[in-house]
Image (cartoon, rainbow, N blue to C red; front, side, top):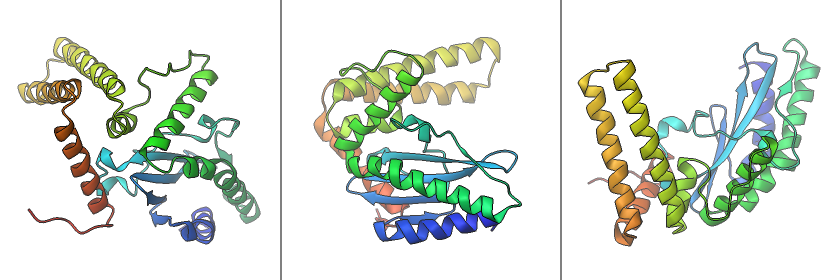
Amino acid sequence: MDILLKTYASECKKNFAPLGFKRSGNNHWRVVNDVYQAFHLKRMRGGGACQILFGIIPLCRGIEAKYVRQESMLIFLPYFLLDCDIMSWSFDPKSEVCIQSCVKNIMGFLQKDLFPYFERGYDCTSAYEENRKIYSCLDRRRNEPNNAEDSFFGGYPEYCMALKNKKYAHAEGYLAMVIDSRKKHLNYVIQEVSPPETYIETENLSIAEDIAMLERVSARDEPFIQNWIGNNERKSLESLGLIKHRTE
């Protein structure tokens, strides 16, 4: 382990383990109520800078064990937060003093900017609203219109939160967008690439599954939706090692 990672891991253990955070590789995570909160230190190309990726993911997303050590689920960057203009932190890999200063600045961001976000997003209901604020902040930074109160925003995690919060119109908006996008992409691939039949069959199956889910949500099929949520939450807790795997 190099000096940066060693120093960073030591500081995280001192400051965040008492708050319930566990370390898996460069990920630090905890489960609060029905959400998974995590942040990840990512070294940038060239070795002289790093970023923090973070996010609040609902357990009903269905978190797989392979993702716990990765940043793939974490897409938010520091400057997505309101009043935070940090993009990354630079350091001299050959200077221990510079590395310590870099880690100190990262800890400052985690404590001052990130943890208030985690504390406010303590379950699916509050995290949904916190993530709405993040996407609205990002829209403003891009000079794009803000998300309307009744429109869908975000991606799959926010879709899952919408289902848990019974914001079914928002969930329908996401599914309709995904179905349309997948159909257009498949048509493009068929016309431009001539993929094998197995690929087309797999994509059509995925589209059919999304259409079936949209029909369930549109019909407000509560027993089905609640069962889907419960199964995914259980699988997440199993993957995270917080409950034992249930034998069928």
